Length: 281
Length: 300
Image (cartoon, rainbow over all chains, first blue to last red; front, side, top):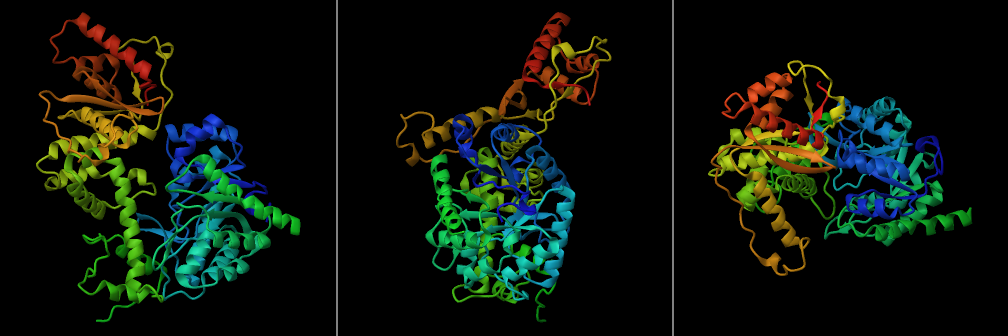
């Protein structure tokens, strides 16, 4: 949806992830960019250069927060200290919505720093939805959950991934950050049709779309964010926006990061698909 | 007895986390034997589905490798100096031992090294015979992490120093100011390492082609004749080291403890043989510097 309660009724266009190698270019050249997505955890610090740079970015650009360690799918409740720090950052950035992943990642306070796949069970649906509701009520900002790339599936699963996603977001009444590259990666690793996934997603809950590159290995695909977006992912994206319509788009590039202009150019390719979609509407 | 596969979310996560956090083998694969002596492949097969290309073990191994590669690469970035002292192989061994024992107890990888000093004090065999130098290096490298993005309070300006008697005057110090007492010139070693690194990456000048092929030498240093008093601090968003006179170090420590200025000066110069005039001049000069650096704040 172009603008909905899940993305704070915004229409943000095409953004890119704010990354350290681009700081100087952005602050010096002030390029025209619709918006930047920041990794929340990189700025959940007390002071210093990260916040100094962020404040300068905030003077010029719209910023949306994306997290990597809230771990909604943990069997335990959200970490209250983490939520407090995150809320301080929310007040600073005035992010219209906030996203994190539909995954788990820590046990007994020990962190994997990974986005580990969920078992798709009813117990996990209930627990994850409860954690999302608790985080949203505390943070007082719309939340969207992102589907992750995965390399393993569990015997105990009682449904497929997209059924799990739909059940969680319905029960939590939250938005979806639809990562098209992650759907593609998981479809290759697990042998499902990625279009079936796209078609099953409740379009009215999609607050944002992620695009990224990946790496192919002999027996699996890894979500590395170190390449341009590959053609099959662009095709999947075209199908996604045919269902969802114009919504906030974000290109992630986290490793072997090229120049700012190269990353921005890659992101702007998404606009071609948006134009087709708008012409067809 | 046949192992029961996990059927609750918490059990599955505990089992998978245990598998993911187990150290890799020497050839960077997942350990073939589980903690109870049974094949890891059997454990993996109980909760992870195979597919037509990868068995359960292989799929679990992807996460096991990702965990270790991610943590080890972050740890190596934070402790470059320790790595240069120990050499690659010993550093890697130490890193695995530390991360296996302490793990990451924070949502932020920034805090990965928070317990390293304590761990190395308990495990000197991992750094012997360079344990003292290694500990000094770890103190400084962890201080860098804290100084980089630690809390900053409004700095006190000279105009704000109230006109009250010195016996009652107290100061606070910036939380990001870390005061260290060291046996080795670690600040100099880190400067040397930075220059080496700039040469190897070609960021210093264009006159060093071929440096990549040179074998990196280990950093080493003898203990200094006298203790080194070092402030690790932040100025205009960059981290710096500043050596301190012993009395200046004592004075700052006393101020941080909440001691009024007059008593703090008395503590700092307790063993000094210098004349009161010299002491007063030195103190004035230090305070000028500390004000300039923004180290002094209102007392807590």
